[in-house]
Image (tube, rainbow, N blue to C red):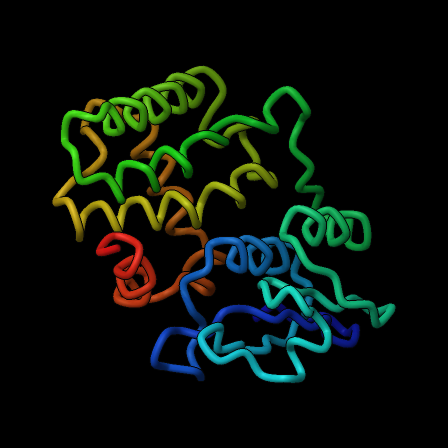
Length: 219
């Protein structure tokens, strides 16, 4: 966990299914953690069992969703988009803002992954849709890489990294599927992301990612 002299901010995240004292598999929670780690902001995690939400959590966030962030002003804030923007404003160094023209790169990958993962029909086109999105990201990285906006990591990478990790783990486990080797720039990008110190410190265990997706795949 990052260390600064300031009082740590607080972050409520999903606890692992069946292991309430371990960080769970929520990619939106990990996105916020990655942002805090990259900025070296001290934070305290509060693990929430989403299958049996505690009263204290529902009081601060009646919708019952994670992540929820408490800044130094004492206000609890939900939604990873909002939280990461607030962190960027409060802790501007290093700057993680993504240039506007690159802000939506890769944004269709996660819904395409979920559709393919849940698909029971191999001919429904969901695999092709996902492949097209991954190929588009590979082309972008070929032109602009190694990260989405060039040499330095930014918010769009921290948003994508946990989602791409879920894609890799869940599709590998449930469908025996992996990203094609000809998408070399994308594979190099994953190698870069998944080996960053911030990612290694915050990533969920693969078994928790699998357990998290199992009910959706088997529905």
